[in-house]
Image (cartoon, rainbow, N blue to C red; front, top):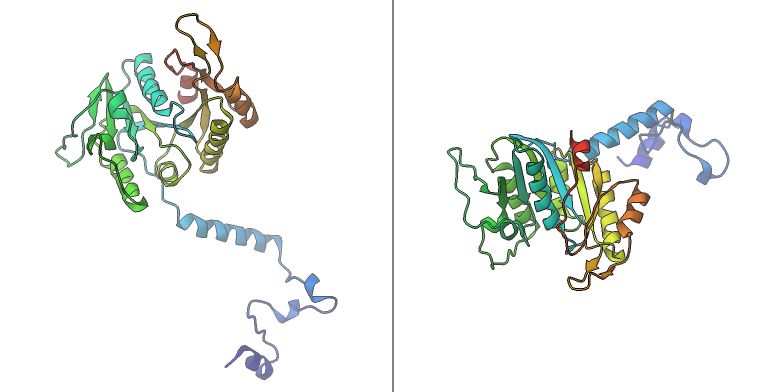
Length: 291
């Protein structure tokens, strides 16, 4: 039986079902009429929408044995993000020799950590069939670079990349770690969202050069972490100035104080300003956030 036929046979009903007859428009233009709804109904509708949206989100589960996770990210590649991640891990270990530090490289397409940490070889399997991270400079390291040949490209689609990320996070025997530093790939795509939504993160560090284009992408990266409720600890301005090794003249190749201006816009701190001639060390300011 059609809706309009039911209406003719049963005048007290509505063809829309959800709108009561008493709420039909009595007079005035049809465009100005809306069904009446109370504030309680509106709040209930918002709660219902939030529940439906939450169904598709993964539940955060801590990495077994890891106390705190710090991610090092950048919107743009080539700004020294992996160098910063390595130096952060080394600085955390050097600040307190009793702390156990791990370094995870989730840049599947361009892993840099094996080269920077001077590590080669394949991870061994533990008795529980988990991969054991490789160790150097007192840092436990895991990377896709340990699982493929150094010159072999990783030609994978998104689902395969997500599966690899899940294995790097969940199928590694980290033991007991005080800090796990995660070197993220550039951008704000699937990997960043997957890591941010699957594990609890203590904070994110954003790396950028003073260059306008790099700062634009860094801004997007910071906003992405805020949207997924990951606290941004601050910005690191890398490659701030080039100092000639002979005459010591300094040249601001990418501009001056770009990260400082962005940090002011975002209401964040600038953790480190590093140049071409010095390593990018993370100062003790980080520990005030993580303690």
